[in-house]
Length: 209
Ligand SMILES: [Cu+2]
Ligand SMILES: [Zn+2]
Figure 1 (cartoon, rainbow, N blue to C red):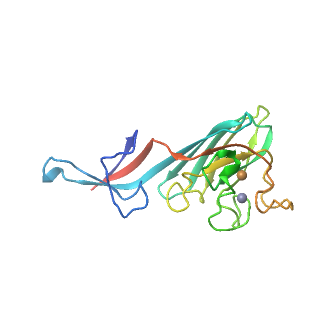
Figure 2: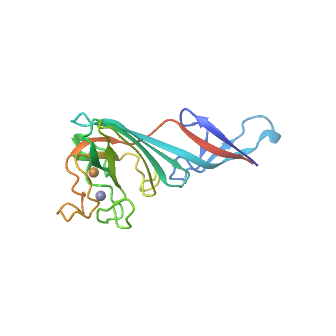
Figure 3: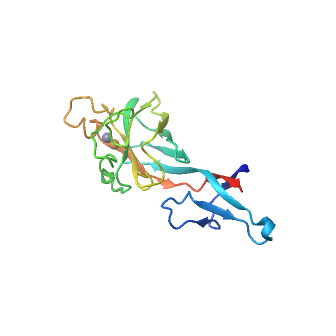
């Protein structure tokens, strides 16, 4: 069997998708078209790279882009670049809703499918959306790469359709002793937010059977 990577600029509508699969990227099967029985080999997807992107904007001058990449069922890699921040730490979370009709307020609380209290990304007890802090430099630019297992791009806890929010203040990671520490990390106002959508570039490794 040979593995090869196919790159698609758009979701490959020609693929047959198993109707029983809740995941649009898995259980995909490529079947060879007309060409005789000898050519009728099936290409089975071995793994897929899923990508999502959010553009963060708000009422302040803070803005930027967050991209997510997940290989198969592995952890999600978050790449962040934000500008217009004050230097220092800023809380950075996935919030429950992708709704920005009333600005970043309508993104709701931190995404919390397991009904736990707020914590640090490395804590066992945390919201799934708790990604800690990002650090802005003297120019107000924050660049970070975060790898996290609780923010998949598919399945019941998918981040797609939810929003990332960057905050005015540092997230105390649940340990500040403030009345808001165990719900929001006391990270202050919401400077910018943006909803995740599946981005149109993704790749799949397929096995030629
Ligand atoms: Cu937040
Ligand atoms: Zn939280």
